[in-house]
Image (cartoon, rainbow, N blue to C red; front, side, top):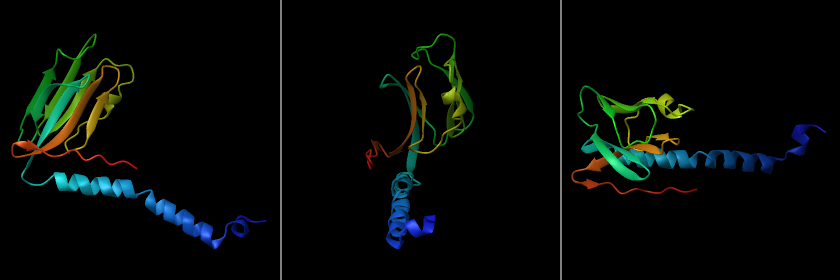
Length: 140
């Protein structure tokens, strides 16, 4: 028996429907993020360690190059965070896997850099005026 004799027409309909539905969370998240990043919103990088915010950096309108050496990050050697214009990245870390360093620059709301070894979390948030936008939880 061949494969096409085993799979019936309604099997194909179900497979294609499930395949299309698998892209739904990505589409919803993209639509939600597009609504946050309006022209009048300000982007802020929130740097936290162990769920405690240690620094907030405004990225919107930021011009230049800056290196942050934060003493609140528990590490043995060095931990540098680099800000270049409207972007931020983890430049140096002494964690063994270096995933946070390889993430490179982030600049849009919803993007994150996570260093599990040192429990460092860098997240870009959009703020409109003086109030922060609501966090929308999307679960599927």
